[in-house]
Amino acid sequence: MNEFDAAILGIVQGLTEFLPVSSSGHLELGKAILGDNSIPSESLMFTVVLHAATALSTIVVFRKDIVEILSGLFSFKWNDETQFSLKIILSMIPATLIGLFFEDELESLFGGNILLVGFMLIITALLLWLADRAKFTGKPVSYKNAFVIGVSQAIALLPGISRSGATISTSVLLGNDKSKAARFSFLMVVPLILGKIAKDILSGDLAESTTETSILVIGFIAAFIAGIVACTWMITLVKKSKLSYFAIYCFVVGIIAIIFGYAN
Image (cartoon, rainbow, N blue to C red; front, side, top):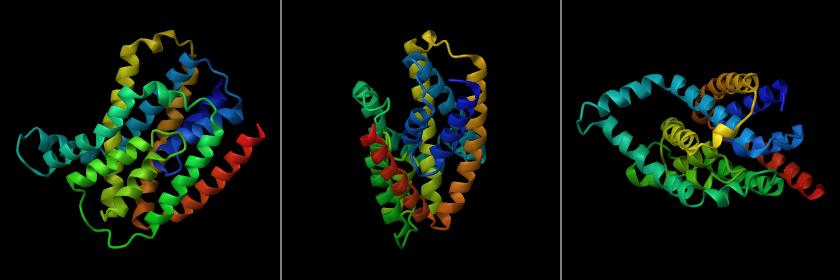
């Protein structure tokens, strides 16, 4: 991997982490197109850096919300902020359990499985199409909703299923307010990303990486800037019910990926 490839993959990660088109699926497609032959330790280090960048971009975009949530939480009162934090924790349970007990099985699905990515992108397209036609979306996210949305996030660990697409679509289909659905979707992933980064660092696997610092820095900057743009844009799009455009995109890319997968 060179600096140009790092910048391209960083932009892809930053955009697709927030746009409902599957960051994991697009990274797999991007690596296949660019011919990335990184050894596992190098690929892991680069992936960790990109996820750190998108987590930081989320924190920047929602900095006021995060400050309010933390302020309310540490007031040690049963307020809206405390309840929101509990809902975030509840939503993390399914993905955390899957990540802990099925990590090896999940990792085996990555590494150029373009056919799987194609079929999962089509499922993402269907979810977005259904969500775009949902009506009466005005309810706040309940505890039950939070857990169901968390199940969607766990399913989105599969390459090709968009995390933001699955969680926002599920929330909207449950009748939640669209802007609140987007806010909950983006904030709920930050603790998971930070937890995964901490786990990878503590495991010692990153110590084996020989990835050049310049590649990591360029990838981080590209993902961070693209993430801020995509996160802000996505909030506006959800409010205006423009998810069908992404549904069409995911369907087309999914078909192309399936054809590419069969051809190779």
